[in-house]
Image 1 (cartoon, rainbow, N blue to C red):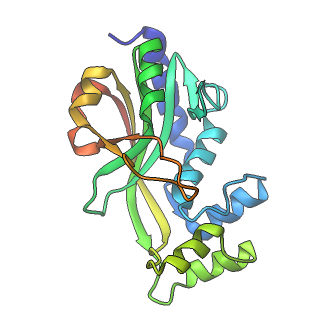
Image 2: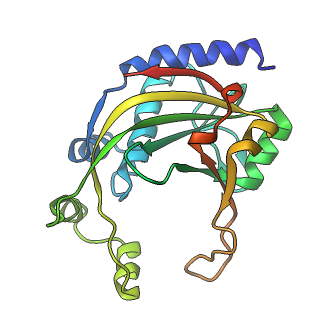
Length: 221
């Protein structure tokens, strides 16, 4: 049973979420993060980092950000339990969300009983065939990233960039061990980093299989 304080925190977060804009334009979001001094404006997957940016703006007086740290893994926020901020495109065939380091999640659940995810869902628009958005972003960065250089050297195809996100709902989810097991899998198991070191295993969540018992509240837009 969730502690009353956690339920009260979720209620406050839900109300604060009503200040989050519904339409996120990629260019405007990246420029907003850059002008505010965020280190994440260079990231290709701007959508998730922009949601974190908005959460830091709107949740600052409700939860502590960043959250607890386990080893090298730091959660996005803490208030009663550890929380992470995640986004997901509704208009896709893949309905899994990569959450965080598996060992860190197990450790925080052992310590506090639950693990929280604040999940923004909406429809996305993608870059045109000429990839004008990517070119604009590269010019703003004054060059391409090391990740992009490595991709080119590998001969791998470039992913189409998301250019807009239209927010439809924000879910406030609190997993215990049982509910997390009902909808989770693993990601990056057996993968290696560029330097050859093994990547730490992460937990993925199938959002279509999240049990009702874990879904504490939803704010619709």
